[in-house]
Structure formats: structure tokens, C-alpha cells
Image (cartoon, rainbow, N blue to C red; front, side, top):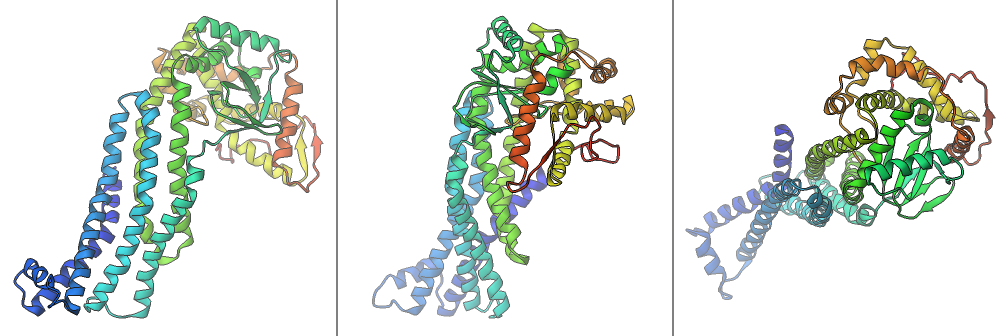
Length: 492
């Protein structure tokens, strides 16, 4: 953290420091040549229209450079400090952070392009003044480098300005899945309503099933692939794999945990906070893209913007991680109201195993699509791959790999499995073996689940395949090599 702050401070000082040095050195040289005892005497002399000449014009220019450099220096240092202080104040209350952080981000995104523009102009004018004073040689290559540094800063400012609209838009949640109707899985709907009533929680307005191994509640617009935009409603997302591997108590714990977020202000927090955080990330991405496009020393000019945005993301991430842990622990306590501590931890063990190698499966399926092949039931395939993953490692290897795993979530962060198990008072060591072994055993398949999974698989293939490519549906019980798990593969 200290190194990060020092790098940020140094990068923010370069352009203003260059301007101050050029202004002060030039002023001292000018005063020495004209034998003035002080800047005040020179300014008084130049204040007379009778005596105003080229020297006075140069002095006025140098004084303007000094003032602009000093203002840029103060703003450069005050911006991250102000952000940090306000963020720490907002962090005292989840409600304050939810309502205040978006405005803080807007303030920073308004000031940052102005600051970058000022830095770019200071590089240009400071370099010109030093050239005029003979401090730097009139080398064409050097002048081109300095000019490029200033131009790079101006382009970065323009990139942020042109991205402002996209930054401040609330991005819909992109989901591959199906919106369930009550008649499709009445038992699941009845379970959700029963748990909501027991918790005194709001009921979700829609339930979406998908194959990605995560679960969450959200109150944002949803872009449902294969359907289109869905309006803002309180949504419960559940993975089909959960309905295949969780027992009754674990499924109650899962739904209880998610509905526990509806009981408090968690969903409102995520809805307000996540878009603001995304705005910062887009700004950082825009500046980083400019840096990647530049060659050699020109990319150095973007250090102030990259350092500032990285510092802001790093700071708010650590603040929100603490709040996120509190929220997840509270949701786990809600799960305990409808299930047991053992079921909560067993649920976490199973979910960790399911989520751990998901990206490898996704990548493999993409390669399979490129060969013109899709699968009839990706959810069932993923369960087969999960069993291969479990079988590929010893119990101790799995425990070490999963104990610090974090359950994935599209809007928030989660504490690790070990932290959550400790919070509910259960040692996960004794549950790992039984929880993972249960995944290897087929459970009764809920009525209608396979048909829903096949619909989702078709939607997924249609979305990710090349529009001009025809694909063949395979239902071979043997997984293709692209989808199999082996120890040689990286889980993520």
C-alpha cells in the first residue's frame, strides 16, 4: 500500500513540478539579468505601461505558468486525499456508502479530465520555457518526446470525457438462463415462498435458472440471452447444478441465504454501488487502453491517471470487502433460521467445488463450438466434469484448494469458505469429505429440470457460436476432450 501511494504521489508531481521549476528558474534568470532585487519590484516596474516591453511579457508568462502549476499541484494532491477521506467517512455506514459513493465517483470523473489536460499543457509550456532558457537542448527527438507526452495526457482526458456516458449508465445484468413460470417447477416456487415467509423477507418477483454455478439476488435490469431486456425487478438467480447436487437442507440454506439479502438493504446497496464502481473501472480501462497504444516514454505520461484510478479502485475495494463480509455473514445467519449450520457449510463446500473449475469448462465449450459441435445438456455435462475434478485430487488437496475459495457473484465479493464456516460455528474439515462424496452420487432429478437445462444449453450455444456457423448437437454420454477435466488443466 505504501509503495502504491508513493508511486501515485510521484507521478502526480511530475508535470506540476516541471512547470514550477521552469517558471521559478526562468523568473530568477530574468530578474538577475535585469538586476531587480525582487519579483515584487519587477512586477511594479512592469505594471507601468510606459516601461512594459518584451521582458515584462516573458515575466507575465512565467508568473502565469507558476500559478497554474501551483494550482495543478494542489489539486493533484488534494484529489486522492479528498477521495480517501470521503470514502472512509462513507464507509462508516452502508447506507451512506450506497448513496454517497456514486456522487463521489461523479466528482472524480469530472475533475480528472481537467487535471489531465492541465498536466498536458504544463508539460508543453514548461518544456518550451526550458527550451527558451537553454536548460534543455533544441533536439528534435527530445522535443517530439515532450510534445508526445503532453498530447498523450490530453488524449487520455478526451477518452474519459467521451466514455462518461457509458460510465454512468447502469449496465444490465447479462444472464444466460430461463425465467421460470410457477407451473414449470411448482415445488421450487413453493419452497421459495415458504422460506420468504419464515424469514419475513420480500419475495422475489422472478426466478431465473442458469447453468453458471453461482447464486444471487439483484434488483437491476436483466438482459436475458435469447429473450432480451427484462425490466428492473427483484430477481433470484439459481444454478441448475444446485438442484442436482444439494439435499433438502442445503437447498433451504441456499435460498435462505439469498433471501436474507432481501430482508435488509443489501440489494439496494449493490444496485447503487456496483454501477459507480463499474464507472471507475471503465475510466481505468480507457486510460490503460491509451497507455497500451502508446510506445516508449509516451505511456509514462499516463502514470498519474493510472495511478490515481488504481488507488481509488484499490481503496474502495478494501472498504467494500469489509462491508461485504458483514453482509454475507448476516445472510448466512438468515440461512441458519431455515436450515442447520452443518447444511450451510456443506452447501459452501459443494458450491466451491462447482465454481472452482467453471472457467475451464466455459473455455472448453467455446473451443467445441468453434468445431461446429454443441451439447444437449451442458448442466449435466458440467456435473460430470465436476466429478472428474473431485476424483482427480486427494481429499487433502481439495481441502487446501477450496478452503480459501470465494463463491463467485456478479455484483459483490464474498468471504472465503473458511471464514464463513467459522462464523456459523462449524469446522469445515469434517464436512469436506462427505460434502464432496455426495456430489459423486446421483440424486433424484426434479421433474422438468432436464428440459429446462436443454433449453438453456441451446440458448447458450446460440449466443456464443459464430452467426455463420452451423453446429451439430451431441448427446454422447462420454464428454468430449474439450470438456473433460484433467489435473494438467488450470481450474480457473
